[in-house]
Structures are given as structure tokens and as C-alpha cells.
Amino acid sequence: MAGIMYGIGVGPGDPELMTLKAVKRIRELKVIAIPHKNKEQCTAYQIARQAVPEIEEKECLHLHMPMTKDENILKESHDQAARTVMEYLDRGVDVGFITLGDVSIYSTFNYLMERLWTEGYDTRLESGIPSFCAAAARLGISLVSGAEELHIIPASYQVRDALKLPGVKVLMKAGRQMEAVKRELKDCGASAVMVENCGMPAERIYGSLDEIPEDAGYYSLMIVR
Image (cartoon, rainbow, N blue to C red):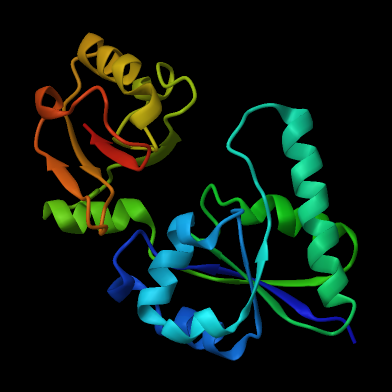
């Protein structure tokens, strides 16, 4: 009988925000997969290790998933990751892939899950707290209320059209495009607050658009009104 592939969200950064279910699942599994060549540099692994120290005793699969928009490179890396995992599943070994935030939101696990689905493997998701919920809580604000709409936008892509949408916009991973994003926000007269590295030791909070630095880090999340 083939093993089960679990996608496990470990939350945005604070190990205390990991769910009890995520902690339990990691403890039960013998093999943990990470989207990185080095677990010491894998943010999701470092978060999980603080809540589940015994993760260090488990076998770690290093699935290289480069941060690039080159479709050929992405396809090759995702195909190779799926092949690596299938070798374990075919032996009846369950595997858990850990990822930041919630596993269903812009997660690298999605690319792996799609390939395993196609091949008929059993895949299951363990939810984690999304970064935008944690960021709103850290800022002490409500994301939306009443009939307000909420739009989640990947800010590493073009945001101009998204900013025209009604309601509140969450711009995720805005750091690399911060100069362009700030320019677009100012042009449309929007206000914004931001949390950088939410729940991590290097966390920074910015209460206005003018405070936000153009050299902000990759894990920068903006809430725009």
C-alpha cells in the first residue's frame, strides 16, 4: 500500500502559531520534506524545529524548488521533486512537506501535489495560519468588516490592475518589487501598513506607506485600503 503525502502549513513565523495538528503530524511522520537544499536555511524547517525539536531525528528530503519564473527550470525541479517523493510513497512510507503559512495559499506544495494527484497518490493538507491573518493581528487591526471585500495579491507580479479592485487588498511578498509597488500605491492614493518577517526575530512593523522602506525583505506583507 502506497504511503500518504501530507502538506503541512507551519504558520507565518512564530512557532507558537503552529497548529496542534501540524505539531502532531510532524511528530508522527518519519520523513519530512522541505523546499530547500539546506535545512539550516529553510525558514519553514526552522519554525517547525522550535515547536517540534524531535524533527531533527527524522529523515529530511531536500527538494530543491528554485525561486524563479523560468517555466522550464520550475517544471524540471518540480518533476524531480515528485519523483523523489514517489520513491518513498511506493515503499509505503508517509511523507510530510512543510511550508510557510497555510499550505493552500501560494504554496510550493501545490506543484508537487498536482503531480502526485495525476499519478494517483493520496495527498492530504494540514492547514496553517495564513500570514495575512497573523499580520493583521500583529497590527491590531481588522482585515475586513461588514460587506468589505478582501483580495489576496501576489505582489511579485503586476499590481496596478489589482489595486483597482474594491475593498481591502493584501499584497504578499512585496519586498522585491517594493519601489514599484509604493509608486503604484501613491499614484492611486491608497494607504498601507506593513509587517515584514511577521512572527520572526527580524520582524518590523510600518504604520504608513511613507514609513515603508524600498529595500524591505522578501517576507513583506502589506494591507492596503
